[in-house]
Amino acid sequence: MKFIDEARIEVIAGDGGDGSASMRREKFVPFGGPDGGDGGRGGSVYAVADRNINTLIDYRFAKKHQARNGENGRGSDCYGKGGEDITLRMPVGTIISDQETGEIIADLTEHNQQVLIAQGGAGGLGNLHFKSSTNRAPRQKTDGKPGERRMLKLELKVLADVGLLGMPNAGKSTFISSVSNARPKIADYPFTTLAPNLGVVRVGPSKSFVIADIPGLIEGAAEGAGLGHRFLRHLQRTGVLLHLVDLAPFDENVDPVADAKAIVGELRKYDEALYEKPRWLVLNKLDMVPEEERGARVKDFIERFEWEGPVYEISALTGQGCEALTYAIFDYISQHSDASRAAEAEDLAADVRFRDDAASKEANE
Image 1 (spheres, one colour):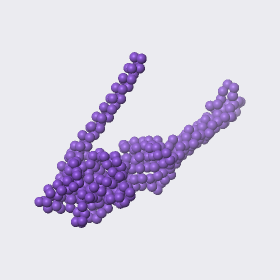
Image 2 (tube, rainbow, N blue to C red):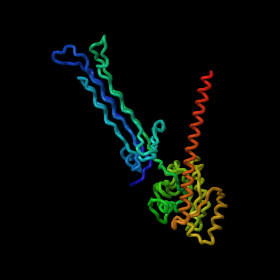
Image 3 (cartoon, helix red, strand yellow):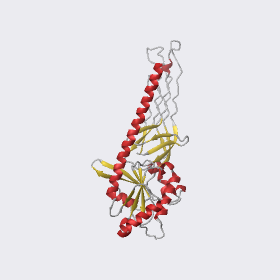
Image 4 (tube, helix red, strand yellow):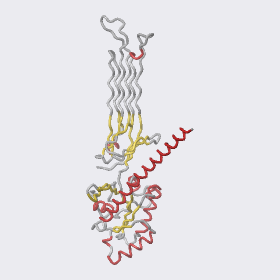
């Protein structure tokens, strides 16, 4: 199935039904009075996150989604039937925003999360609501309210703990297939990966994390060159980035250091926040470097790249160094998650203390 991560749709909620202006007409019941029922409410439009869906392709072609209108009220106190709601199922990680205002309506981050995206109109009132001591036979009734109508932009950002960065043919797809259950297409030509791939890496019972592989970046990606710029948004939710570098390129004229610097530059131009994310250097294809040259080549690369962060030496093809890397990633993610929860708890505690102090001060005054 083709991977589609952006779509624009129109959602139209149902209009409310009109109220009825009816009088009770029955044998032997003179002056029966009003008996007009209310109109039914219009159907609403909801969005629901579904982990079994991984693309927005359904919304690339079905652009208009409309709920049913409510039925009109009738005599004999008959209320109109409410319009049926409709539910749009979307991948987990979908951001829904209003095209006209840019307002983010919802961020679907959990399976079965449901949000209202277009409210159905309220039904009109029948004339039985307008009866009074001075108006025993009212002819007033109200019309139903129109339902909301919205033009929406859907943007999918995959939810992953780890993101892979690198030039085409750096070995990202080989790495993700080596350490996870993902089976992306692998070949010896650039841009084999045309869409993001997700893999679950299991390091033990109930111990796992999700890794995302996007198409390789090239110089000028931030301005639209190549494919990777289209998918960089999928790395924005990750906790750590792995920058894979091919230490043994087939073309002798290719400089791995220049390529690595180009990747970092594109990252910074695309999004400063993405550039500031924790980033680890992963030197790949060491199995293709003679053993006696490995140490010198790794040292030379780190010095010229001026890298001071974590460095891992692996061979995605043979699996050398991959296990140690996955364990290190899991430990980092676990600690980072705990630290984030602790920070949130501290912020909440500080807010509570602030409120308590303010309340005490107000009481004393």
